[in-house]
Length: 218
Image (cartoon, rainbow, N blue to C red; front, side, top):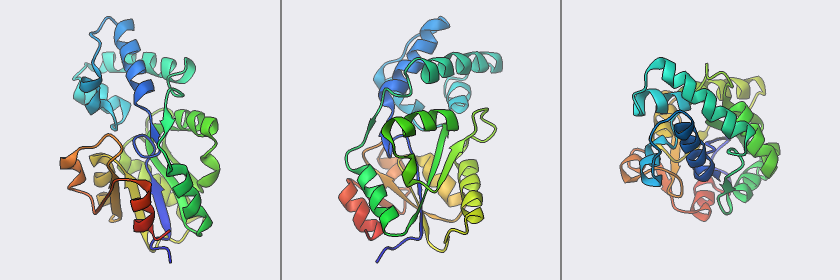
């Protein structure tokens, strides 16, 4: 007996490890614009937040520089292979397949923009397992986790999806905060980009897909 009627899935850090391509894209941006490159350790805070948030709030860049960085980053990420420099976490697609086969409605809920999401999803052929693609907009007018969840839930309502028992599966504090704003349960996975402090804020924590499937009642 499944425990949930609808699952919202984060993408980066939950379904795919996007670190290699994101790391490459950020350092390409910094080199191109004459800024210091970062190490893999320095990159960790960049994983999870929307792109504009990273350039504006984490790196404290001026508004004009933020837009310049975003343009260079997106060109490399979307057009020069950055997006596809990633890999699926072991077993996660099989878990999503099991959820779909069990009659659960699956929706993405990612701060990655739609174009990048589709590039990766089509490459790995997993978009077919989702009833709704809850993504950020390409112009970033919708980019926070809260806004993405709002959009996903609206689209699910349009499909008459059963929203009586919803859970979000993610890996960062932004997932917890977005879920809390909507009053839904949240499970963080330890294989992503989060840390113990962030994990402590979740309703549930899982270390592998077997534990996740047990939680979901699959």
